[in-house]
Length: 220
Image (cartoon, rainbow, N blue to C red; front, side):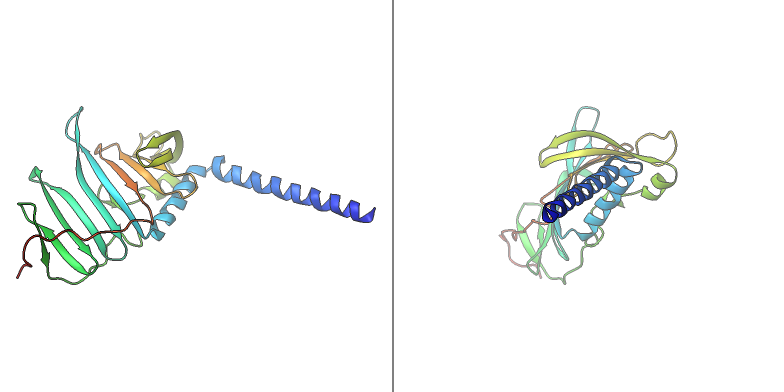
């Protein structure tokens, strides 16, 4: 009988511990400051990210938009970059550093090899840059006087996520919104109210790069 009593006490203790853990998890996710804590966890996940793909969608008018930039990064120095020229949005520049070699695409579409040394990508160890700022801007102001509000669950082209709206002052509108994967806390999409730009991310920590096919002699 003593063994049975001890077993019941052990089971009761485990049950109480599980309830306590669940309570802490619910408080963390839904209690006061949960939105801020979620974005802080996301910011740390971004600092630890080793690779990803991204795409920037910029609005042309109220009814249309275009891909202004696409970028693939494998830390610390490999990348493939495609970007619209600021003076001529129809002109697209492309460059890459893959497996120790620099590449540039010519206006006729051919790729050439360029001499050069590896350069650490500034995003590595910090995370992507969106609207000219490392993610996430304004978190300190949101903590002092703004808030981070949970929005709807969404399904993007690269998976499901939950929207969070960030404001940096009392009564202020949304500065930006970010859609985060639930458990990894990594972003799949970010929208900025001021610019109207939308940033999409995917293949976190599982991106690999293939060198461009060189069809022109190496540059001198």
